[in-house]
Amino acid sequence: MNIRDTVLPVLGPLGDQEDLEEIKDSLFSGWWGKGPKVELFEQKFAELVGSKYAIAVTSNSHGQDLVVKALGLKDVDIINPTMSFITTAIVPLWNNCTSNIVDIDEKTLCLDPEDVKRSLKPDTKMVIAVNMSGIPAPIDVIRSFYDGFILEDCAHSCYTKGAGTKGDVAVWSFQAVKTLPMGDGGMITTNDETLYNKMKDMTWFGIPSTWSRVNSGKYSWDYEVDTLGYKCYMIDLQAALGLSQLKKLSHNLDFRKYVQAEYNERLSSHVKRPFYSDTVQYYIARVPKIIRNQLINYLAHKKIHTSVHFKPLHKHPLLKQNRNYAIADTIWESFITLPCHAGMSKEDVDYVIYWVNKYFSEVYR
Image (cartoon, rainbow, N blue to C red; front, side, top):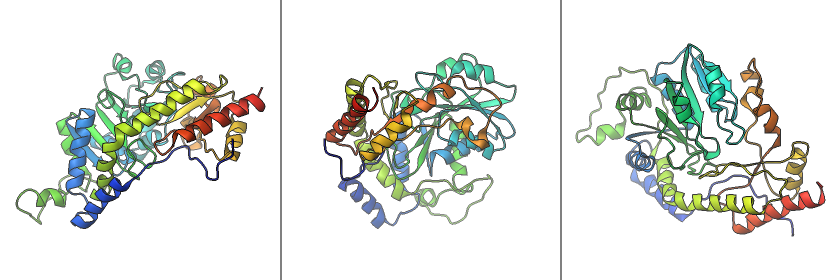
């Protein structure tokens, strides 16, 4: 098979004319900031995930931070998994909390409930449960021994059936390579009306949005601030893309699952398949760790971009923990994320399979 002229990215968004039209509509509407499209996007997203309330924010990271601040958590212990993007371990530090990083389940790569149980402290006030690669975290099991607050990190699970319904609050991501890509952005969903109202006020320094004041029937320039707030609200130019991408979400997920099925069926037996995912945010295969980096370089020369999701958080100097990680430390060096996204073609899938199998048939024997 001939080598491609251009690099096949491991992740990427897929835009079209419909996206441009939706953004153009906002461009000429006069509402570039938080306005009607943010409101509509919040409504439609809440319906999608089965939640009473939704708050559109600038990112998943700011969403998690807003939850911690709304709860008034400071100088306490927050448990989070070592296999995650760095957000989940950094947000506790932003709030002067202990980032208590736990080990993972070998199959799902989500946090290990037994290690959560062992790691609980008297001042543990939150568990951040990441649905790794869209695979549901074992929240029901954790609920059996922990009655504190659970933040369900759904950055990878838009939309995995039932995602966002297990924790006390869920936070989602619309970053550029997620299943609902918007360049960036996030959403907080919850059924807690009190928490919802508090967080909503906090997204813009405690000031009611201009749109809400205009849309109330009688615009008022006057307002009073009685809440310490921040600036992390979504704007209509972002929400426009979200509304358009939302229409294509089901189709794009079907293609991701097609890629997953093809890889599972046709890749070399040397490649260990990941746990099934409804979103396949990452197709995290495992190969013998002694050749993982060699395979990454081999595929790079074939114009196939791969990655590793993720380097365990406890490996970073800032987040070093005084404990062992029996599972994460054993398996992470075998991880390789293969391309899987809606921007691929079926020929691209065949191309990846061909060169991965070629490596194992001719280089690694």
